[in-house]
Length: 301
Image: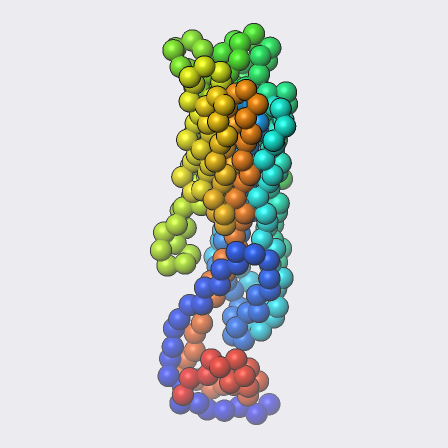
């Protein structure tokens, strides 16, 4: 096979491609492995003393093998819908996908009439409800299971008694479980749990935290909602107030609503980020490599 001895200067660079919506990545001709960050859509918060939505699944790794010069479809998951009716659970976020890597959408936060939250990449927080037992569970995170885990469980109904209302649990997140509902006066757990904290990544060259859980909604009276978790989680709200949505392109969960028929908010959409190392060295070059680099505009003399 013909070969060319090139006086090619050694170069070292990185190309970072961020997908805020679905598209296609065509790898550089000499790329053989990449670093990825794949975050799914966050879930919506529940309505009427709702739990916070769980963050979208968060998966990242280096050294992932790819074929140079090949197209890879990319799917960026949307945020889950909020529940706007009386006391229902928020919708799950949608999956994000790159190659064989799938991050699962966050699990929806529970509501007054649908207590149990939903499993997902990170689980939704439990809804507050009269007649429910303490310890009624938040949604399971890392569902379906992968290693390392893509997320954490949503917050529980940690107290309030079987015949008392209670605040909603916070949504689970990439870096922490969602917080349980909180005591307003030491005995009545009417305040919403805080959303779990997200995780920071420096794949783009600067540290950014993503995939935070939504805060849970507060119960009747003056009970406050829980704060959204760092990384785009929406805040929960107190009675008669709507919550806030998860931040777009972070996979943050939406906040749970307060009491008296208020509505939760939607989760934030996900994101897919790919970093390719681009390198060349002074050496003997295959003519096909030269052709590919000239065509792609990456050949250095």
